[in-house]
Each structure stands twice: as C-alpha cells, then as structure tokens.
Image (cartoon, rainbow, N blue to C red; front, top):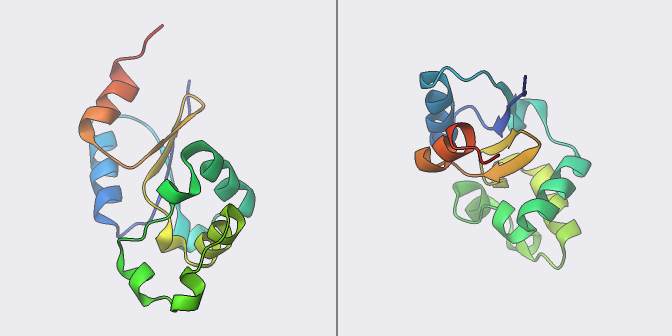
Length: 120
C-alpha cells in the first residue's frame, strides 16, 4: 500500500481544496503542516531539485510582501532554501508525495490523473 503525504499549511485555501479532494475520493494520506511541524533543509533541497527553487518559492502571497526587501535578494538556491525554512508560508503548496513522485500545487484534474489514471 502506498503512503501518500501532503505537505502544506492548515489554513491555506489551496491546501484545504486538496485535502477535501483527497477525502471526497476516500484516499488515505498523511498531512504535514509546514508551519507547526517545520520542514528540513534537506527536504527543501529535494523539492528545489525536483521543481526548481523558482517554482517552489511563492512570491505572490502576503508573506513575500511583508518580508524586508534585503531578504528578498536571492542569489542562489541555498538563499531560497534558507528563506523558505525561515518563512514556511513562502513554500508553494501543497506538495504531494505519492508513489515516490512529488507534485506541486493542486488542480482536481491533475490529482485525478495522479491517483486514477496510472500508466503501467
């Protein structure tokens, strides 16, 4: 049996939609709250390699707008990882781990393909 892991923030609307979709389809998953449980530098590095740090770093949210300008001067993946570790709300979410593959964000059509249209 495959363990599905969903990483996100409890009060994020997109994460709420993903959790509802998983529950509505009676799919078991473990939820990891990035704010309350944190995230390791190693995990962020893995995701940055998987998706690219530019895709992983959410510059559209209120957290980005609130942080000081000097902290926004990102020169490398390492800088981005340190910033996301410090401010977990900067991580684009949710991050889904299913069948040893990672997926970023939520769209119902994408989740349907991930869980129900597997190619052998």
